[in-house]
Length: 220
Picture 1 (cartoon, rainbow, N blue to C red):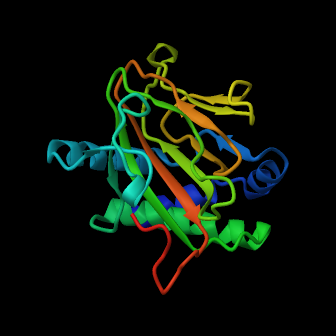
Picture 2 (picture 1 turned 90 degrees about the vertical axis):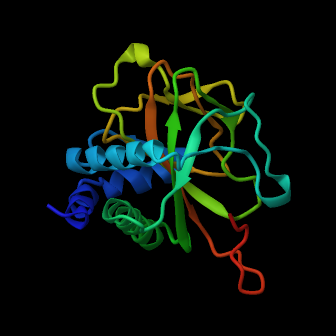
């Protein structure tokens, strides 16, 4: 089966009524077994290939003049997705299907999707943060897809979603292969807990068009 077919099969598993209701009522949703086993296996293999080719870079925080590397805040390594391979194209098509449904059902005006692979080595983490500053109106809905087969509780590395106080937990999501999480970028503080095993995922963001002078803001 081609990557396009794997993406279509994963999109068919999306409980769209549940997703839109949960985002509206609670600001987040997560579901297990959304991505097919074939899709997660090939995405994980793609990430491993990029690692073997030394194409992952240390992740930072902020953008452009505010960009910085701070190992006290995050310690993952990343590679932005594009359509350089069939499997990357397949996942981006899967995200496109989500974007169209969110726009149709919630009238969010989402314009584009950006995403990167993320590899957390044992001991790596990402401290509590928001994916978009409140009122910035760029990233609207965040997406995390997990690529870790046979993930065990003692591996840790959970994605934890918090209330506004950044201490009360909304949810603790184990990074098991096939699990997908969506949440509102400006409203849900979250962190990646320190992992005890290599942790593979895709983090992505659905954005509105905040272009100025034909340039999408903010650029990568």
